[in-house]
Length: 467
Image (cartoon, rainbow, N blue to C red):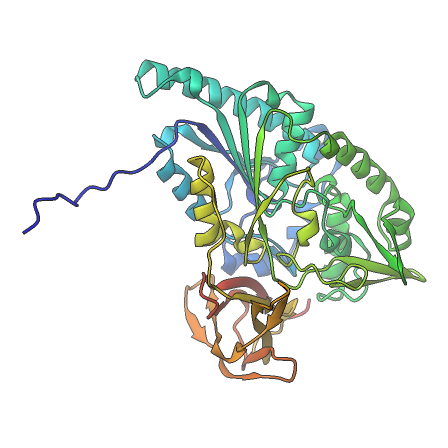
């Protein structure tokens, strides 16, 4: 018999003060009357959408002046999704992993914020909260002799828009005056074509009628959503490509003035100046069908999953080329996952854990990758089909479809937790697998595809009747 006691395993930990910053739609919001206007349970989210939810979310002059009383209370506990525009899964798993890596749970705080407002204004709040936390934690480390308090850094773990808020805190509000590390997951450093789609008039939108108009009215009122407009050259016309102009947004039914203001705020982030003294590291979602460019003709927008004919893919929301800051020598860690699920998958947890411990996180070897395409929305009780592909790299390093019949598809009702296997899956002519369901119940469903050798690729599907 071995005399080695394996009941307790040494756990590496980090002394840093840590702040978790969520992304777009990642914070629960409560209005001045105490009514929750964002972060509802899945069972309530769709009925609220077809009620007055979008009216209550619309940004008012009082919101901009800070007098309406809307507060961000905590990180979302349920999937954040409005129709086809998807924010994030619950942050509870990520927060648990971060606390498990910290030397003490008190080293970790969460920073909910009103994601409807501008990145710049939220950056100021983050800078104050983060510096206060860092100073308090250093005192705890010193008083309780947990380590060398002078060696305590601040690490920000940021998802999606949270990375832009962190950059604003660094460049505009002095967060770079303390030792700073930043880990981003799916941050749209150069914006997202999907945000442009949301901010236009909704022609061809998957949720027609009154609620599509309400959705667009809410979107155009939000400085935060305008801060996600694509800042890279994304408007194509044949072989030419140019940046989005404010007049383009006006042509498509949006607000030119809001686009101008968003561009000015983005330029203040000064990505061209590099990371400064901070250490930035990024995990980016890859291999998922992602809008990358747009053609504008006669007031109509046609979105494309390619840029000048080349499909760079991404996480379904942020195309891969926009998910890094573009600094010389900067490398990102690819994660085969969708934007909402980036904060809820084992590969992202491993990235955050390793980077917190100053380890070199590398993608797994010997695995193929899964690409998942879900419809924008589905009708309750009506057949719905998703497409998935297993991707492997050829001799030139390019992804190609192979053996997709090994994939399995299932879905989970996020309100009840009930899982359902999808039957009748078959590989079609282009090598993609198509799987159908005879009809899902109203609600928010999580579609999961397994078989690539890593965590299942997951995406959220909104199932609701038209208004």
